[in-house]
Image (cartoon, rainbow, N blue to C red):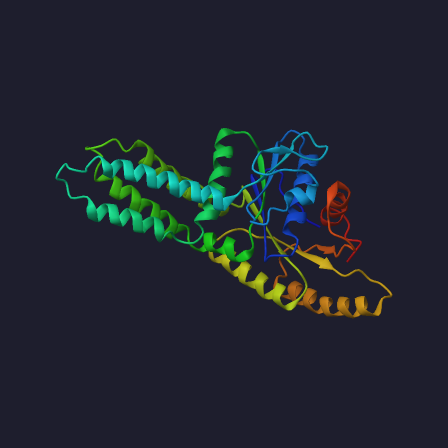
Length: 315
């Protein structure tokens, strides 16, 4: 079973799409909130599918919402694409305002203006994820929550950010360096502050992710060939980025049954479960069963809490 340090600030659940990250992250948030009543816990999702609402059977959206019976547990669904689109739109307006002031002044700004426009167009992958995490860093700075549980977007989206933070920060700094050329001529407060603040938060996110005292990453997989391949890819990327990952959850394990089809499927799954144990012998690897229905509501989530953080009677 999982044993998460209550002194953590961030618990991230990651894995390929369709492995049940949202259900497991929600269950973990419930567990952490119950066992740490003095701490305010926020479970949030950057997954474009936004299934936290379905999971808790509560309308959540982009407003911080109280969920379950725990008075210290809240949820938030972050629309990362919208945040990134808004950032680009606002930033472009700021830049246009800066350069419009030079029209008719005799100052040649055509090249820098074109560079700025192309930089926005050629934004590196992972910026949408950065915008979502930037929002979380803001909440952290405000001191509104003590512990954040993140249901990440599918592996590909997440790895883009984990593998490219330096490129993302350099992209932001390129904007900042161009803006500084005009520091003494026009007021650059809005545009410069946006670039600088986001660049600083990318660094803070990096620092938090590699700090095992602050962050735990829980890799989620299912016992099949593609699940194992995605898990290996994820673990490799986490190790490359020096991000601590001591826990793997194998989800959707077919329970023992007299059904021939189910027994055959379970036997196949056990082969992959044994491979996962063999490849990652030092990690905590609980198993969560395949439910006969979609996991929705507090009763289903409580069952996952019992399994994931208690006796694994379904394995």
